[in-house]
Structure formats: C-alpha cells, structure tokens
Length: 116
Length: 112
Image (cartoon, rainbow over the protein chains, first blue to last red):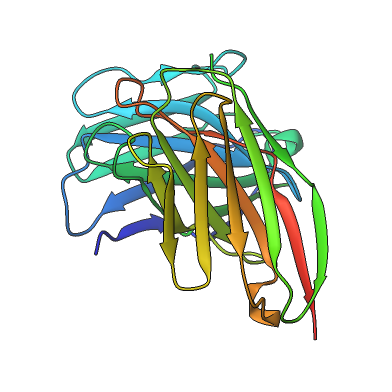
C-alpha cells in the first residue's frame, strides 16, 4: 500500500531558528501533498496544499512567508518553519495522494515540533 | 468552503456495545467521506471511507452510512473492544478540491 515517510519525528529548536520537515511518498508519485497542523486534543487544521512543480496554496490565516512549502518532485514536499516561535510548537502532519480526494490520502507519521 | 461538524466530542461505551459517531457537512460538492482513527501520539489511519454514489459500506465491525440529501454521514462500530479506544475523525472532500476538511474528532473510550 501507499507509504508516506515524514522526518524528523521530533525536533526541538530555539526561537528564531528555522526547521525543515520532509514528507516523502515512498512507493507512489504524489502529485498533491497536504500539510496539516494539529494542536493537542484538537482536530487537523489544513495549512496548505502542495502541488508538484507549482506554488503551494495556503489556507486563510496561514502565513506563507513563515511556513515555506516546496514540492520539487513527485515524491518529496518540504515544510520549513522560519523564525520559529514557541507558539509554532505543534504536531505537523503531511498527507499525500495522487490527486483528488477520491481515494483518500495517506498520512505521514507526523513531526512534533517544540520551540524553546 | 466546507464545514464539517462532528458529534459527540466524547463517547464512552462498555465493551461489546455499539458506538455511533455522526458528522454533517455543508458543501454539496463533497463526494468522498473518509473516517480516520488516531491513537495517542500516532498518525491518523484511514479505517473506512464512502463515496457519494453509495449509501452504506461495511467492513467487519465497522460501517459507514451516508445521507446525501441531509448532508450527514455516520460511523458505526459494533461489538466494541478496548483497542477501539482512540480519537476518530470524519472528513469530507471533493474530487475538484482534493483537500479534506476534518471534523473536530470524537474521543471514544471502550471500557472493559
């Protein structure tokens, strides 16, 4: 079945630094990847849609200059949290699919980001 | 945009009983409705899904029903077991948008 790998699983960084999170589709080509953020005991909030070879589409209220998304190939999308602040601490999860929501999307294992 | 509401937020049942979680959606263009199970500290896992061209789908102890007219769909778990304890999320998406809008989740606790 479809496998999505996400790294790192946990990261602690200092305020003001940047952190890059990778999302890879291992056995299929993902034309579309989604980045979600999940606060403790809360639902998944879509941050942005990443399409291979084009600019990401950000949801309302998400700062595109703070959360940089790059989908340079059909198997890799990256999310970079720039100038991280403690309020950016959260669980970030990517999901990948072959386009459209019709067949569901496979989630990565998630990244727990803690900004100190 | 799409708005998905999920109820209840918490559900506690005795082992062996049934559990039902309900969701409503707002966008009539939505045509795909997956359900995810998320255990503590882990990623969401797709457990069952339904497309708008069917009204019901069953997979062993899990079933999902869809009422397109009323714009609601439900997850039914029968003969619950302690390992069913988790947070369950419903979602709605359309072919065109691709992205899923999630409900707020239901924390299911199955008491042995």
